[in-house]
Image (cartoon, rainbow, N blue to C red; front, side, top):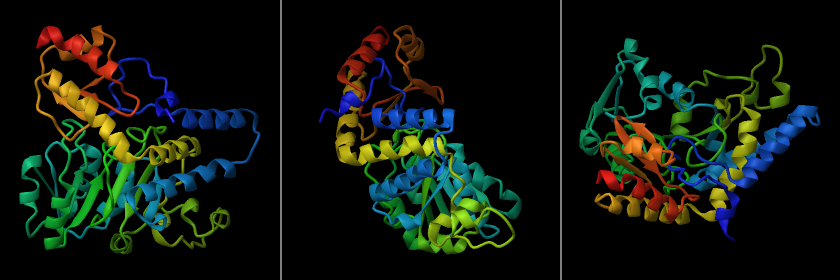
Length: 344
């Protein structure tokens, strides 16, 4: 099957690190749901079936048990119960360019003595020493595209029994990942998983589930969803589902077919495609090859040159950031290099 036919990007889209483009099955599913909403053709339960499908697909992609997966809307809200469970005086280690959705949930507990320690990414593993209680870091850095040495982080954290909390929003969908040795992994699906913004998923290890209080408990987290609408009797679901936030239905309607397509294509296949294009782009700029689908360059004038050529990328931390995904082509690479050629 030629999967590229499932997308219709305008040439020059190199900004998946900002948001991904929906594959045709996701787009059509969302349009059908919106059509039903427009005329009141159905109740909400058929839309909610997509939430279950998304949860199960997410679990399969990570080699996790679906019972250990919860759903929500944002990364920061998903991490809030974990941060709230930290004892007073806990120390949280992170990267000094970490996206703040994985920083602020910890920092708001500074009044309880929680300390966030930020170090350069190259020094992160060495900084995992006794006294660190949590290592909270991204699998792939948003601003630089740097890929975390996750195995080294997990190994060093296990030696001191520190929790490992991973924001995989910039990696899941192209970077092979599992939850082995990880206590929490949270992903917003609107980037590399090509879903509508508003569908977040998270994995919680069993030991972390026991430590955390479901502070956003709601009807959807009830053991019997339909029996949890009213009253003061609360029986929450077993496992990670008790941490569910009430889902944005249409976001998950689009997310389910998108994640299932990633499964169908295969993350390894996507990884090879993305890295081939990213490294061709790097080579054209005189940069060494990398293991990331994100290319960050400080080439002066690059952003203006891209805009003049109709290429859509982003500027992050003062650098041009281009990102390549399954629907990107060599033509996109050549167009981007041609736009930058006068600057090199």
